[in-house]
Every structure is written in structure tokens, then in C-alpha cells.
Amino acid sequence: MANVVPSAANPDTAPAVSEAVRALAEADFGTVAQRFAGAGFAVALPAPGILQIKAADGRQRASVLVSVGVHGDETGPIEVVAHLLEALSRQAQSLAVNLMVCVGNLAAIRAGKRFIDADLNRMFRASRGSLADAAEAERADTLIAATSAFFADAGPVRWHLDLHTAIRPSLYPTFAIVPDLIADEGKTKLLHWLGEAGIGAVIMNPQSAGTYSYYSAEHHGAAASTVELGRVGTLGRNDLSLFADVARALDGLLRGAAPGAATVESHVFKVAQEIIKLSDDFRMAFDRATQNFTALKQGEEIARDGATVYVVRHAEELVVFPNPDVRVGLRAGLMVVRSS
Image (cartoon, rainbow, N blue to C red; front, top):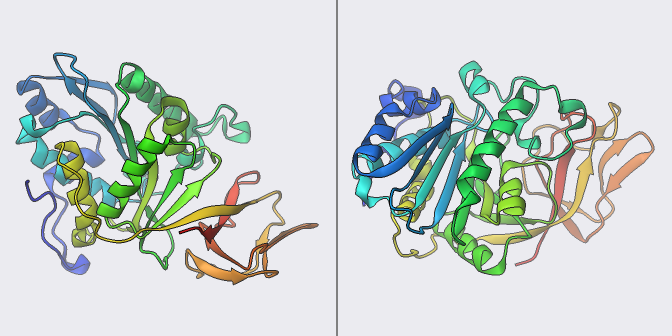
């Protein structure tokens, strides 16, 4: 198996962006697409930032969607996938799955921002309300169309790994959100892969917040997950040694390797309650330095929104994704409880 990420580097002295990373960040699949096509694969570029590679003879293989850059400032996964795809394209016959690589919010990546008008990862829903005219709405429609086409003739083994980095510190440096509606067999294999990838915590999510991974699970039967891999960083200056486990596990998945041993025992959580921002009066009861998975005790206040007060209902709940700056009507945080 090829080494798919460079050796560790000090972020303060990291080299300039490599050609492979630059190409992926700019949605330029030209070179890798040519390599896979030259190796006999059916290659398509249905829209900017989307690459699809399938077995030319139509034989049934696992179908894997890997997405990065759904938030434009989450650059670490872009670098990881760029190096992985570059290495794999040089050994193209090693690709053992039908693969779709998606670079999400191209405009936000160019601007170095999380989004342009609104969070793209809230757009994968039938009704977008006040977000219908946002720049990200059109991009979501493009991604939905390409995803539907990719999975339309796929066999039963379907994956979607949507790779992110978090905007705040976390007591679990890596964690994943997994739609609870995934079929048991796919869920079991996904949870094993997450352990192999070094993901320390898994949150089983019972309902959609309009995310890309939940869309793929709900509408296409994919074993899908939003995977949080550390902190937001500058393109070309991420310490890729921190991504080594997930890079190795992803490379193995794409090459059809047998599942490896888990590198961590993932702690599993379930959602206790969603904190929805109802108005501009919304205020959280803790400061912006609060880490993901910070524990609160029963009866403690979580947030206040006019006459609505959110409090901890269980003996202990942990807060994840607290963000008072979301738009009215969107989720401002999750409260989770440990299940295993």
C-alpha cells in the first residue's frame, strides 16, 4: 500500500501547497482523470469539483463517495484526499471500487471562508426556507444531482464519507456523526471502519439537519458519516501526521483491502436533544471557548431563547457543535449521552 500522506511537518514551517493539493482545491481533476481513463476506467466530470470513476465493463463493485470542502475553511481533508488520489492514480488498477470524489463549496474554498451566503451542509433538504436564494443552494442542487446519478445503478454496497474539521476544540479530537437509519449490516461495517480510522467518538443521529451525509443515507441507502478530523487549518499548513489513521483506512477501503484492526475503541453516543435557534434573542449559557463533548449536569441551563429555556434532562449530557451564530431556525447545538 502506498504512503498516501507526507511525513509530519511543523505547521509553522510547512512547504508551499503541492501541485496535487492545489489541483484538488481548485477542482482541477485533469491529470488524475486522464490516468484513470488511461487505465481503462469510465471517467466522468459531471460538474466542477466532481469526479466519477467506474469500472468500464459495468461489473458490480462497492460504490464510495468521498466529499471534502463542504465548508471552505476545512482544508485538512482536502490535503489528505489530494495526496491519496494522486498516489492511487499512479497505481490506477489498484482502485477496487466505483469512486466519486466531490469538492463541496468551491467558492468558499477560493475565498478561504466557511461559506459564502449560508452553510452548505444545511442545504440537503427538500425545504430550504430563507436559505433558498443563498449561493450555496445552487451548489447543493448540483451535488444532489451528481450523487443521485452516481448511486442510480450502484450495487448494495454504498458508502459516503464526508470529511470535515471542527471550528472549536474537542475532548475527542476526532469524531463522527452517523445517521441512525442506516441498515444494520452497513452500519456495522461503517462503525468498524471508523474505529480503524482512529475516530474516538461516534454520535448516532436520529434525524437530519440537512447534511450531505444524512441525505446520502436517507435517499440512497449509503453507509454515510460526517467525519470530524481535528481543527480548521490553512491550506498547505496542516500537520498531515494527525490524519494518518484516516488516510490509511480510506486508502484501504478504496483498494479493497480486508478490514484492519481498530486503532481506537470508539465511544458511541446518542442524541438526547437538539438545540434550535428560534430567534435572534438566542443565548447560550456558556462561552465560546467551550469544547465539543463538554459535560453538563441534569438541570443545568444550556441556552435561553426568549421564553424558551433549554436545560439538561439526563444525569449528564455532553454538548457538541455549540454555535449561537447559526441562522434562526437552524440547529445551534446537539446534546448527547453515552450509550456504549
